[in-house]
Amino acid sequence: MSVKKEFKHWIEVKEKDGNIARYSVFKKGRSVFIKNENGYEHLMHPSAQSIKDEIRIVFEAEMIRMILPGQE
Image (cartoon, rainbow, N blue to C red):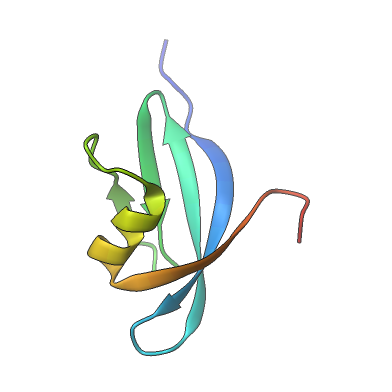
């Protein structure tokens, strides 16, 4: 049986050019994916300490806040 990709939350970030963007976070099994507004989907490395660090390193963006479903 295949594992379904499950949406977790959005993360509002400030990108290096100053724009505010929303990234989506998904989970599939034990894997965590971060998807930016351009459609690029990044598989978070298992040794990563946190989503915040992964966004800072991979996307060169600063996390502003986490938005849970129904919280908007």
